Image (cartoon, rainbow, N blue to C red; front, side):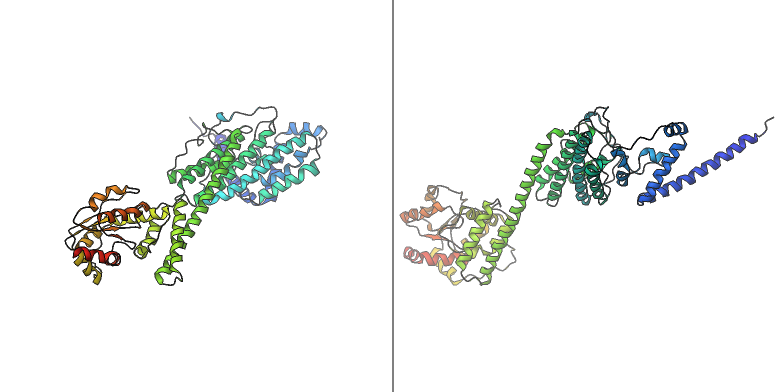
Length: 538
């Protein structure tokens, strides 16, 4: 016959009460820790409480320690209270008050008796870093620069301590200065200044870490300059990401030489790189994986490449600003010409031609759409220059090529009324042929000229730069050809000797400085060879 065991029942009740008590304590502790993050006094009080709990739960060790004479605190231990003001509670302290660490534990590393561990054996970061936005990069850069300074100081401090320097006068002021500056930056934990931080056998390892933090900060500055123009200077943007990946990987390797933990800012940089490369579709070939670490010894070369890329980016920015200024200059002088406000139109045209020449010399493609749209409304009014720079001639050829391939005008648009000169030219050329030399053939202009002048044919073949003049002679020599038109703005300068061929064959040569419009061509023909055409007609 089974009977209920009153003792076991009472234990069950006590277990339930204990669980409720623990849950209540967990809630209290959680609120205390949340408040301690903002309250220095509360945080120190919790530390003292943790120490008391530790002493009471280890009575034998505490009694033995009490029986021994107290050893004087060394300088580093005496400074622990100051350093702790900017550091999170240690795992041991948090365990004593029954809570889990609210953030990654401070970096700890090998002591003087433990050799550094090879970076290639490290695993991925031991804690997850939250998503890193673009606007966090300036703050990460600031923390990296301060950590570089603190790491350099750690090397100096370790050497000074070995030499027995005075702590109060030589070390404490520098420690406090770094700690105060770290307090001014959000989430800045100078683990290299913490009393429980690494103490490598070779102080030069700190200097390597300082160089890695500096390289990462410089790479971050470069990325922030290039990301603003990532679409315009895509190549430089992707190169800056690769340099940042190499710098942060070298930082991780340098920290790995003295510690088992990653630096939080290095982890943030890595997380940001993973996000931005995914969003922008950029593939970084090296140093984004733990098994492909960058060598910290190569940091001087990395710094040199960062500096070179930054100079290249600066030059691009300056060239872009200069290009924008020159385009505005062209627009200004063309507007003066179109509005009739130019005091000396020839001067304004010379400024336009010279500025266009400079734009192409500085790398602007002759086919640039912005430049073409500025010049296109004015090409028909362009004066007859004796000579123009080669780059300006290239721009004019591109405009001509664009016009030759552009779809025909709206058929519903009413064309300009023919001028009286068109009728006069028609009487002189009707039933005859004409040759056009220069530029690319424009079907619409060719059709309009044939119809307006009643031509039997308008010979207009593609003209290549520096094409020999001999290729035109057979066409010019045809008996039905009455006149030769030379589009001087689109032709090579060598075509100036074309007049000799025309004179020898008895064909008038007409230079067209103003374009292919029917009215303008008629005016140029009458101005330059009306008497010769009338004599041939008689």
